Length: 366
Ligand SMILES: [Zn+2]
Ligand SMILES: [Zn+2]
Image (cartoon, rainbow, N blue to C red; front, side):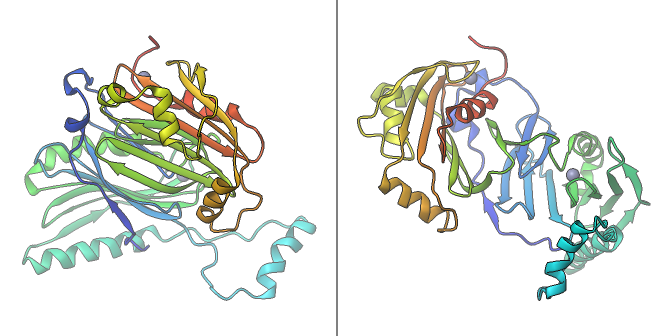
């Protein structure tokens, strides 16, 4: 399993810069990314992530200088690693379908070998610093609600200390390696946190939606839409998803009071809409069950279609022709949220569905 990934690194911390910290409740940190979801104790910070869904990496650091961190690596287990596809490879699945023959059984991945490879790399690092390194891999077990996981726990000491688990999931066909890492003296903390973290970690969603949760953005997006770009900046989070020529974009601004001193919500929606909203009608709207705000529905003009076409790298004709966007202020968190959908058929319901899933603050409506 390759453990290297293209990583996005996030400067930390930013929570203090964005909000009145005193109003934030001490709730667990919820992370959702590429179908992976888990919880950690309050105020842990996502510090790096990869964009790909097939194979990726997440790192979440504990608050302060304790040096504890949670790491998750995942990779889709290979079906056929041969790069050159023969005519047989192409035709065989169709023939099997035609004659109702089952797909050939794919041998389960060798978890022990994968883990040994990872631990060997850690051992090498430890030996560079002239430190001893010891690891224990427990025997494989079947786990999960429907026995979908083959899993093995592991721990190591040397140049630090870690406790984690590797598993293969039959449902999503991912190999996942998850661990809590800290210093030698963190033994008890690692044990306690690993228990919560590994117990909460799921590698796939059982619905048609994936949870995307980082910092205080928490939203569900249809699985068919893949992450296309992200912006994680002080005061501004943005996730953009594409499916063919269609798009869903979710954005969150901190410091809403400062924004709303200069702009109305309507002006802020016009200024930040993915398409040129110009003088389009923006009307009041019940964006979701928690908040009222504004929304706009428009036909996508040629200029914006070209922009979308470039983003989809030209592979997705026809492009979306309908736009629906809404924006609301969450007074509880003093943040502004925007959800936009660009679809081939008019689909404001999708916008409202995504907006409704957006858990902008804990608790019920105003
Ligand atoms: Zn899974
Ligand atoms: Zn809210």
